[in-house]
Length: 435
Image (tube, rainbow, N blue to C red):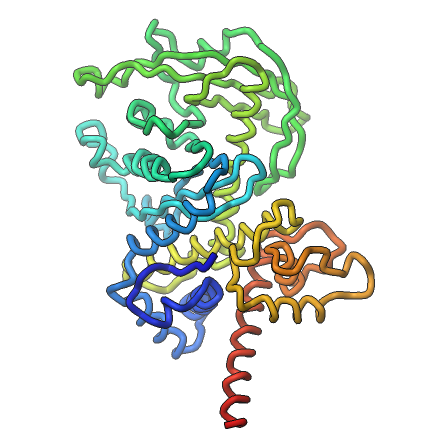
């Protein structure tokens, strides 16, 4: 599958696959963020200020490609917000949504992105403004975007506590399921508060859940008690005079009752549109929510451990946001490679590379392979796993210790862009000398 950033009216951008513009992208971040060449800055300034390069065009192009990759798959539309530049009590933020395969955690690509600026001046008036005029409306807008994924087997929007928004629950698209971690102690129809009401419910089972590694926490297994059932929530007071009706959702409460010494206990209180009949159903929803961590990996790849978007020295908001969005799209491609590093799904090379890159990847693989079996590329030629192995080795992975993560693969992919560019220049020089 050939990937471009969109219809930009520039032949160089139109014909370039992902390697072309992502190679530009990495140089752009280096040039603007850490004192790169002046020529590089001028080249990328022109690109980012091209009036045909719009956020809408980039998002639309990414969405179309991702929608095709979602065909027939059980898709989690995971969304979250991250800061891109801090400023006093506010700053600049990116709200991103990516597609995640519910079965294997692979990332087919980016679905949506919006940018916003926050300050401390609007909080006092938040109840007086219409929902469409609030920053929180982005959660519903992105969910509606997810509902446009035609051909997916199932679509589920997954989000953390910031998405605990009554308007989102009441107005979700009917073809999109929801899994949201509860944040507010909402009032139920009978007058009870949801947190205390759930805590009083009987425990319906226990489970051993593997918690993924996160900053400051190693991966570990946690024994969790399970409670689930339905809860009908009253509209908040600001909606009492409107026609908004109560909303009934399923709650799933997973609580670690005996955590290890010195470890903060896990407690997930999830709200979902899924019908839960038994413990197996509840655990399926919990496993889906656990894959929300994929968007945290995306942000990590975009920031200091990867593209280092926080170091960008672009003051003009428009070009800066376009570059950040390009970083986001590129990071999802890196995550595709990470997901296929073991060759689980045998995805094709063209998910993340141009078909014409295959000979160079094969040549590099032959050069990088060692004498032992663990230093051989075990994946079939033409597969994304084969290319991921090459990039991991270029990024410094030896093949012996652990599995290569997104930062290693990103480093190797960047190295691949340099090698490819060098091969292109060498070919031009050779052709000129031969002529």
